[in-house]
Length: 94
Image 1: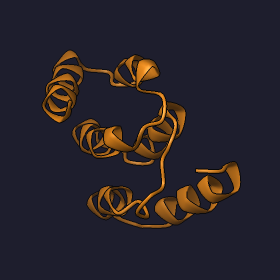
Image 2: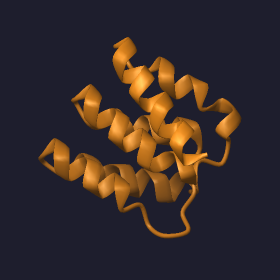
Image 3: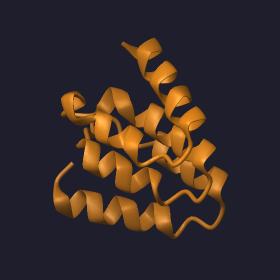
Image 4: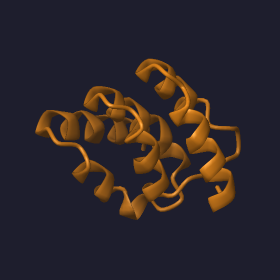
């Protein structure tokens, strides 16, 4: 996703009032749009609940252009059980 496209998309996600709706919006990333790990993390961080951040990151993983950098996404999660949940979800997608 170009920086301009990403700025518009993250703005639309941030303007969505409820956390579950934000995750749904992230999951509905336009078809064919790919994101960097940094963009995936930024989108996930628009959601205030760690368990929902896991959902958002897992949904975005198949669209990540730099999976070799995805380890940095795990580090953004504050709880070990959330990091493990994300690792399990990503393993299932590979």
